[in-house]
Amino acid sequence: MKLTIVGGGGFRVPLVYGALLEKAERLGLAEVVLHDVDVARLERIAPVLEGLAAEHGARLPFRTTSVLEDAIEGADYVFCAIRVGQLEGRVVDESVPLGLGVLGQETTGPGGICFALRTIPVMVALAQTIAERAPAAWLINFTNPAGMVTEAVQQVLGERAVGICDSPSGLCRRVAGALGREPGELWFDYFGLNHLGWLKGVRDRREELLPALLDDDARLAGLEEGRLFGADWLRALQMIPNEYLYYFYYAADTVNAIRESPASRGAFLLEQQRAFYAEDGQDPAAALATWRATRHDRERSYMAEARSAAGDGSEHDIDANAGYESEAMAVLEAMALNTRAVLILNVANRSSLPVLDGRAVVEVPAVVGRAGPVPLAVGDVPADAGALVALMKEVERTTIDAALTGSSALAIKALALHPLVPSVTTARAIFAGYRARLPQLEEAFS
Ligand code: G6P
Ligand code: MN
Image (tube, rainbow, N blue to C red; front, side, top):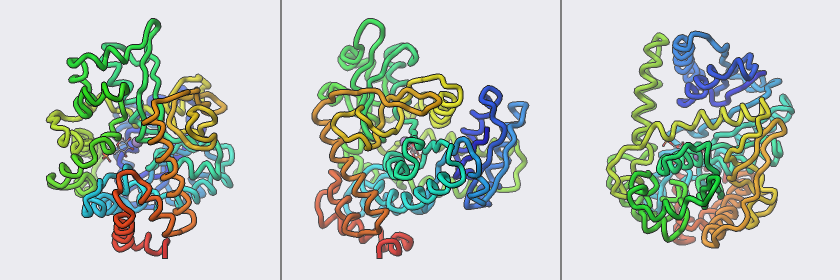
């Protein structure tokens, strides 16, 4: 089995490689190929992987390349996590709307639209290379905004493209923890779009457990989402939203909190990651130690702006959300070993969520085996959530069309339709701000 990681010089690649080390034998994995357009980043990450292999005691063979065709040729699985425009782009995505009093965030709000506009053409080109060089491969996509990107690449690869995110499984794990139960014992009714989902039910053999949890202030206080959204708001919804919905339900609070913080998330990460990638020539053990320290700092401050807006002084629970690599492994294992596990993935809707058509990519539980993921029927959902999902799918599709046609009118329409953008005038100003600061975008839309 050949597995290719596109974005192989990325900071979270050691998480994936570390997980692969554990599973390689069982999966019959012979070769891992790391592809990146930036050779220096590959050179920085490779010793970290060597460090992991040394700790593990056996080395899963890997090689690095900057030639995409070589990386993709004959692959069985392609993992892809790239950041088009790098962290410099993320800083622009976040800061332009903030300058106009609108939420600035990596994937939610105008930031996610701008991120998608530059990412989708690159991802569709990658999908075409996969279709030519590795027509039997599965594309496991982590590239954000994962929902939009997955829907766009499905135009080329159909259902062989699957989108993943660690956020839904993190929520389920934390809710199980709040209930004092193991996640594997429970059934989680989760639905929505990527970074726009809700947990509408949790069941065990006997009963529905969510109502009692929502009535229990003490348990809710022990749950990150309980502190973030507040018990009263969770009771009003009668569901537990994905953490990213904080940016919808408490948009103004987040804008204020970000404005008061010393740096936006993107700016903080830009500094932090620059320092990490600048330090080269380390031996494997030292490279691994630096990487671990950097990662700890990154995860600890994850979503800090939302927690600070909510007045939650605690740190992010690193262990309860160490799911980035677990998600990728779970999909790989379910497909390679045909386990038919149920995983929450970004897949074509078919008829899972009745508020959307069959081709819409949604984030729902799916049975995953050798033939890929098959979404489960979610059925009816509360009308407020269904309406937001339907509207955001229109925003996503307008964004995809804008990205693939280079139409400014469509880009502005996508921004203006977004519920967090208060006016068409603001949408125009945001788009003009993006064009002024991103030469690549200016070129694509001129
Ligand atoms: C979670 C989300 C990802 C997102 C990341 C941001 O893992 O599921 O989609 O990219 O958080 O974390 P960061 O450390 O980059 O702010
Ligand atoms: Mn995600």
